[in-house]
Image (cartoon, rainbow, N blue to C red; front, side):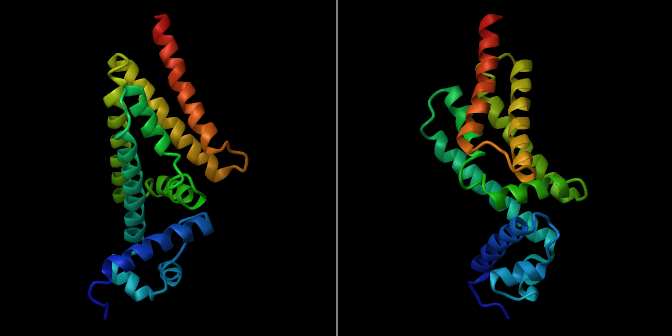
Length: 196
């Protein structure tokens, strides 16, 4: 029987264990038993709290997204201009609490799982819409609507692309370089706008 008051602690331990197991395996091909063992509990207890591996994984990705959102909000407190706000949003994707091997592996598996799971696809769509909305909020202050949408799509593609490359390739630029590449992409659009 689970101890009263331990549920949040144990759920968090399972989430962290899920991230570690996926990072170690590089795939979602891990069992509830492996996750539970890493968390220091039985698979029966893990099933009690989440019901299935898919639910553990979804809770894990909600946790990762929540950490990302908190990082963005912290950064936005000091951002004064639309460009600073956009930079906070993009840089937060490559913060140390996001762009680590285990988290990157979780994101890659999240993308793949979304192809086969409606619930995972819904969560991925929530993330994608939120990123798009957050970017467009400030891009619309700089560019016409159609251009703002195009720039937001490009930024999102760069973010996703660097995550995929990081998961699959050994030679990937570091965080600072990636942030600079995305900033350069935005600068190119600003220069194009200045010429038009």
